[in-house]
Length: 219
Image 1 (cartoon, helix red, strand yellow):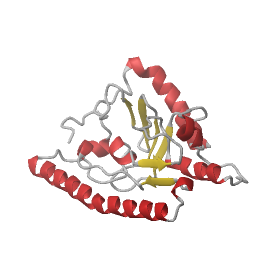
Image 2 (cartoon, helix red, strand yellow):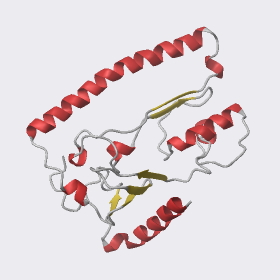
Image 3 (cartoon, one colour):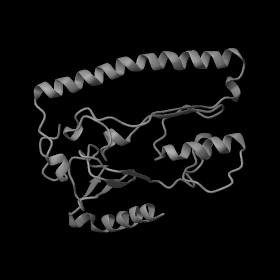
Image 4 (cartoon, one colour):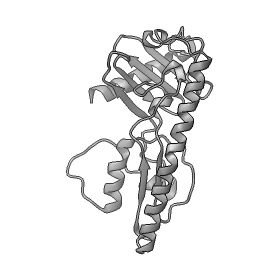
């Protein structure tokens, strides 16, 4: 619920603090979402069994992901479209024959799925497009060629202004259409509670990330 939102942009500061009743409601909504996902687990189980039964599992790559994250009260927000981890983070699971079963901490994006599928299928790519193939990462854990960052953006609506973001393992840097900025040092502040964009210790990081963000926006 983030009791102190004084360092957040105006759209967050306008949100009312969450009381006990709202917190309980969000916990129940989260519980219900987990319960609903049991049907997804069952469906995936049936699909994998069907592919195995016809003898194709050893030649099949399975990709599982989602369309967007959803906040359950983080930063007083209860929907999608926010620039924080609750809204940006989505599941991405890839089963590739011969690849070891592990949790990978490299930063990747949904835009990497298309070039990965093209690489696996041997398809030629007639024109450059966003993203990189994750096949080296999947097969040998090689992170060579990965940008190490994710660009995200939101067009804006009546609730949340437009924003653009660069996210790395260390930082989340956000610029809003209102001119407001945010920086979170994720190693020390994984829940993005303290905006350090104006802290002198992070001045060089802000300059570097702002330049990177501008390169993405102008591309």
